[in-house]
Amino acid sequence: MSDARFHEGPSTPEPPYAPAFYPGEVPVGAPSASRRSLLDWHPATDPDLPLLRSSVPLVNRAPRSARAPRVMSLAAFGTTAARSLQGGGTDRHYAFTHWALIDLLVVWGGSAAEGLIVVPEAPVVDAGHRAGVPVLGTVFLPQREHGGRPVWTDDLLARDGAGEFLLTGRLAEVAAVLGFDGWFVNAETQLEPDNATSAPARRTAAEMLAFVRDLSGRVDHMVWYDSLTRAGRIDWQDGVTDENRDFVARPEGAGPTEVFLNFNWAKSEGHVDATLAETAALGRDATDLFFGVDTESAGSDTSVRWDALTDSEGAPRGSIGIYRPEGSIRQLEHWSLEAFEQTEARYWEAREHPGPRVPGTWPGIATLAPHRPPHPLPIATAFTTGAGREYRVDGVASGIGRWYHLAVQDPMPPLRWVHEGGLTAALDWDDAWQAGESLRLTVGTGSGRVLVWQGPAGTLGHAWPVEVVASAGDVALALSVVDADGEQRVPLEPRVAVDEPTWRRWEGVVARAPRGNVSVHLEVAGAGTVRVGMLVLGDVSTAPPAPPSPLTARERADGVLLTWDRDPAVHHWEVLNGPRVVGLATAGAFRLAPGTATEMVSVRAVSPRWARSTPARPFS
Image (cartoon, rainbow, N blue to C red; front, side):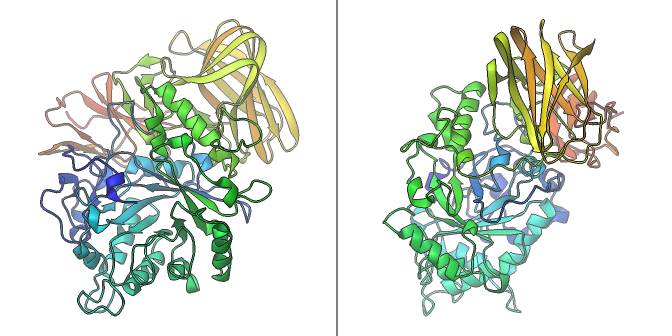
């Protein structure tokens, strides 16, 4: 997996962007966001630290069953040197929302020209953590034919005077301080034989193995990519063999927590069987092996020998590693949010292929591994994907045009949109109650229903409230709540119109406390179109959050940095200039562009139920 396959080349982005470090020596001409050495980085002196840090702790999810396969996604959310720390002014972005279908996310990147140690951008970490998904950065040593330099390997494997690795502790510090969960190590620079005399002693497979085992004990996740052999050669084994078994083993807990196998694991009959047997002999679980699937160029048109990996029941015998799922965007002839959503549905759910798996077609990741919704009740959701054509506040356009910010995402059902009867369902980016979109339901005649939530019951008691904010004509709405004890149907009563006259609140009460896993369907009776702007299940506070405090502003050469204390009760913050929303933040910080007129700048907090605080102003 070389840098030639990542990005087109160096760029000159403007800050604020997530950094990509070099392990030591920095090449002349590296982009400004990457022009630094990890050895020289100190969080206390980094002026962008408030923007770099994730603000959302990792949410717990129900554990998988012992043998259930896992899914790892290796996705790029921008070029290595241009990954925004505070969203952006376009809707053409990889706004991934199928979090319930993956177990690990690796923020992919790295190139000889742009930086080798890729720190995940905080909005992506926040979005993943809200969904219970650990997020990892990437350590990349390119192949020499793609610009890899032996000196970078020397820098990565350097030891201090006491014989300790210089960078394993520093990599662990970066992850801990910035709030992400570990590293994916992709070492593709040829090493030297262990008995070599013409190269530094540290540039050997034995030293790389020692580095990997040291790093694995310092972070929650350390994923090793199947690239190096025990002799230090770049020779992808596409499985576990005598040549790479040392890099797969985990003696006494020292070694990679997970291993990503190269893509050609079905290259010969019985190769997967031999890999699984070797893995078992090492005392490792098959679910720690992620069989790589390269979808960068073809997306859901990628041909995969799933039959070599699955058992007689069609279940994978190991875990699945998806390389570059955002490659599905390349299948689009013309970009639109609607086309992107359909492409994502095909990739993750194989919506075009319901029923039994069809040989030769993409099965959809949802058919290969069980989903794990992370959000227990109570929840509130405006079905926000983190991107839109405009940003709305209580149904009214706020001033931002096209936008993205992944950490503004709301909870979503794991599968979209499962419906029945005379109803169709899709997201609508042309009308929204909050943020970028609503859920549009179209009923021809009669009635229908759509699955709007599925997840753990949580701790709700009896008589729990439900609410829908909807723009609807002459229809009747009801919720069907199904749990371990059966189904409860709750008619919803329309109440007063909310601030924007086309939207109304519909309310009801569910009599019995939920138990186990809960599925919630919204039922519509009567012809017409219903736009659902918000769904509230359980008692989610309607109180506005506290304004950001203390709100400070510091003028710098690259703009004005606003900072304030983080508040776990806040979903995100809106940055305003006068009445217009001009930016979004989850980090407790936002950088205004140079030249921004600041007299009317303010910041307000937004709760999970989209209640807003009074604005706070840093300027008199």
